[in-house]
Image 1 (cartoon, rainbow, N blue to C red):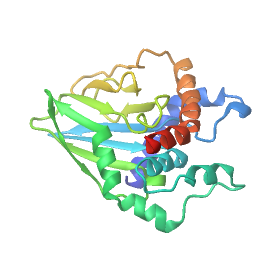
Image 2 (cartoon, rainbow, N blue to C red):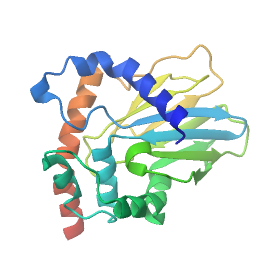
Image 3 (tube, rainbow, N blue to C red):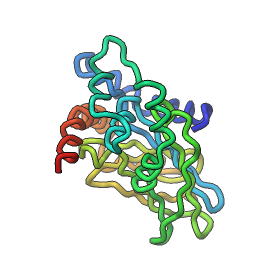
Length: 228
């Protein structure tokens, strides 16, 4: 994700969840920060989705696909200074075909029931910049179905907060294990908010709290999956 676009994601998310985060007491302020976010936009036949998460949540992805070892998250959280894995491990994760497979399976776009082919942009640093995917649809994009399940397969308490960049409705929505898919109308104006059935800011406080529970349970969930 280019720095300017990543900065816009940060600004949009901060503007939306800043009040909710400030209401969380320090003892309950989980180090994982706000939920993973996806910035979506459309132009012509293409939809673009930029997914980014806190580095510790990105670590969980690396562990889930087997690129990072099982102790990566524990070392990150327990160290006096939270540090990422060695550069070689981060480079392996960012360049891994397994990461691209995971992304394309869990960030999808379809148009009239037909999947739009996704292309993952080169990843400089998955831990800090996330991932950008461009989807080519058969027809000019108006109404499409977005499906987001990144990290949701690791623990069902994860949520992803999606935002529209430019024209489109809803302007924001929450994707969950129970509700992983949303219809997005990029031709609609003015945009409408879809909080996934939650009210803000209380719904967003729930998202923040759930992220803590989700990632705290990620190690156990992944250990169970690898034993099975």
